[in-house]
Image (cartoon, rainbow, N blue to C red; front, side, top):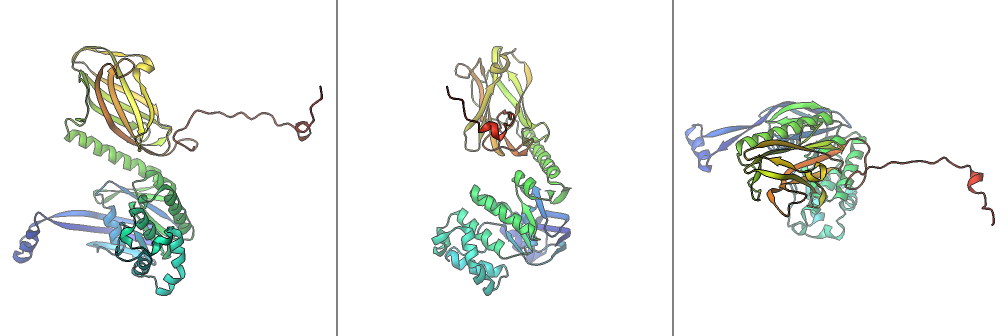
Length: 411
């Protein structure tokens, strides 16, 4: 269905716009070369979903633009069996002055649909987008989510052989995302091939049959989604280490008396070895503490918050095992491990060094949202809500039908 072989793409970068003209006139090289893709190759069979993972700048968007014909490759081949449509960038091909209904016609024609096909599927497109009466309003009055709904609805109803999806899908609300995922699964079951580019690691695990990891324009891994996510997590962890090395004082946003400070810290999944982990996995929060004075009663406090800033869980070492002591000039590594039995999503960690049971008396060091981590997928049974609570079930012995309907004796 899709066969990409030894794909190369590079771009000329000019320091100033005038350098482009100077190079054209003089023939002297005034540009640097940026290699976006370097020998990438893969195949996608009918009814298969291939996930594409990679850090920003890894080459994901360039790859999709090459496959849709927006860009032309420098070398390599792209073979696609049938019509290909994609939802690459929000609002691509739309005219904001036209109504949603008129944009259906214009955008569907660009995707290769005939006027007869458009007329036959117009109502299906409108119904799926759930725009209702807004379909006759100018597109400039739409929210970004409404534009995404319309774009996805047109693309998926064009009945392509191959469908390309990137992060534009994440703009919609939770309900519409689920609706899109269901439609994508139906498309796959009917034999369609899908290229799915996303930073939503849980969606890649759930939706994809295989996954490809790009780094620096090269394919560094191709295989199972679980293993691909682990490779991606290691790349992200390496990026975090590089940022720490470049930044001596990474957490300059911290405040407090600074009688004790934290010089280096990290939050790493014990199995994933990265900042993305499965629900139920142990999360190790490690800190390097330095004491500027002798302190007799020190505690480390941790608060986990969700993406809305709501407090999910808080604890400190005083509550767990009492305070610890620090001598002036002493350095100590501290590790607090939490079982992250949380629902999939993104979370932040606020950290504090203080005296005693709380920070109200002496707050030595405090940093809001000092660390981030993401929960993707589950270790163990799935659950609903924010977190998994310890639970057990006991089923009593079943009574016979006759016993269960036996009338009570009168007194």
